[in-house]
Length: 337
Ligand code: MLT
Image (tube, rainbow, N blue to C red; front, top):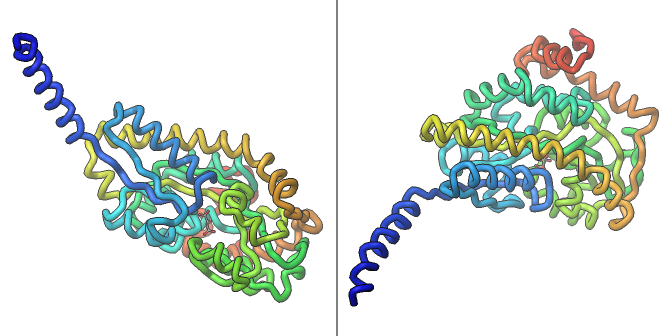
């Protein structure tokens, strides 16, 4: 009885502490467009772990991969309206809401992972983040680096644009990417990412483009046979938080979110470098895909697609914006027309 009397206050206060800790604990929802196993999921998991560690477990992030919470463009809208905390989606699906980020999806501007890192982690990335807050109501707090987008199809090996004759290719609902395919004289079918696998499976479209890691994560090898080792756009996939949500956080918590995002971004870069070659090999050896090199070092693809640049100078904020990007990458200014 005596023991019981002494223990009771301790038990009550422990229960109160647990209750108040629980009351302070929060769970945030994160939408992810791709299936688990890709670079988007890797970034999401890493961010969730970093946030948990940095908040002593007070903030937990639940991940919803594979478009469970809607198409990538829908999840951006939902985060912007405060109906969703976080989303990871391809940059090309942000461009329609924040046109200046289109500079990152202009064909053949980014040549590889190093270019992508230079741009996203420097002043260009900062400016595009500010523009995206202003235009789309979401803040970019991390970046997944997914690799070059490779063209896949179910019909035949493709080395030159003419090899795509008669095929319908799924493209994101992104004006710049649609125009790139038109420059190659190909029939593009703009379609949400969440509908793409089924459309490929049913033969509504014959091909699409995405990085090796995404092709693998989405099991596209089940419905596509041929890959062209092209690199017309480098796939960047930002982690965004609704700006309303971000502003509702204390200054300390805002810093924690940004730090967790930076750590997850660094992890994503290392992950790409460590995984891409092995996954490319697996697509051929384990899944029977065929990889074709673009003819003449991709020169015809590059020449034709680059003609569309001037059509988008206005939407990306002027030719100067592209020139700034090219300068960071150590390249010549863009043509006037
Ligand atoms: C798209 O093709 O719409 C996206 O790049 C897919 C993705 O988010 O991985």
